Image (cartoon, rainbow, N blue to C red):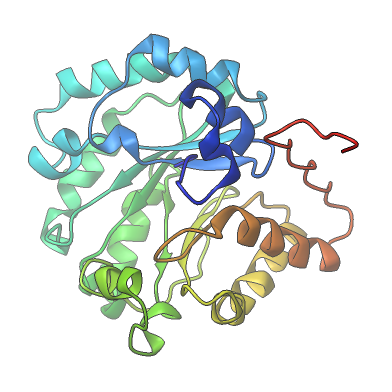
Length: 271
């Protein structure tokens, strides 16, 4: 997402919000593509608002992942790949988020699906069934399946969020919807992707991500290029928190380029 009612860019016309977001952060989760495949014209407008180095991690439509569960999906997959073509190098990875009911017995379906995908894109898979996090043989099975096509495993870290009871309406809502799975911090490729869910209290969010600062620094020193997405239940402070995370990493890896200064929503004046 690149627009939220609490973010400064929300006051801009919809056609300008992505460009404003891109002055705050250099990557975005393309969650809207889960609900409907956009038109090529819409995607071309996304490309026009972002630098070629900007990273889109685009979620495959639910018709592919949840309704048809990766089988008999040639038509919707072809339409999706055609639609996102205008992004060019901005399509950093295609995100295959699987439902919680997608179990170890379904991994062969995932393997066949990955093998049929064009090699012109990178792929990243998010699983939510508990067995993928608690059974060593299942972990090895999934890792081996992903390795055949150099696909990444996307962890969604909710451990800080579930560490204590919710204290706000947004947290109570997320408490019933977000997956509660063990922490995973293993990168399979040189382009790891992490999703982190903190709390509505920024202090607790920052406390919870310290392990990811350590992991990210390690990955960078190994020559990897990670992408980190910072969420909170209400997401009100997400862009500022993402920049804070980046700055904490950069303090330890000073050769990283600084993020650009956010573009003001309103022109600066003397009075």
